Length: 155
Image (tube, rainbow, N blue to C red; front, side, top):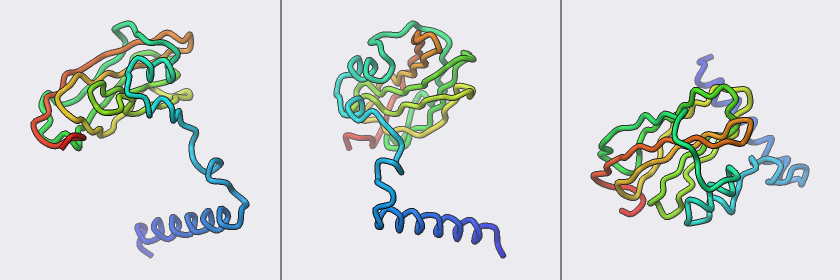
């Protein structure tokens, strides 16, 4: 049997089992979904969102690196990688300050190297901000200006 077919069948069976359990009332959607700071993602102020997620409104420069293109041809899909040299990092958060909602993504790290590679959506040209919180609660940040030529959140 083809490996792709096995993976597809296993995923289908797992999703079906979870759907049946939710339908029967054995699982609630809250227990299936990951916990996330809804209020922080809904706020339109970056400092408020940072305080809700990381506990402070400002961060010190350093220990964080952002790799992203200087010019994004399509703002709807911008590849970005955020890393840190901190060994005791607890969270890694990505902010897009000029998007309608500045908190782009937030990751809790458990004994892992602070490294996130993803694709984000940008409404227009802006500085993207990466913030890492260490085990003492101290915040470090880096930013990178990305010029968007077309697309994005705004059209």
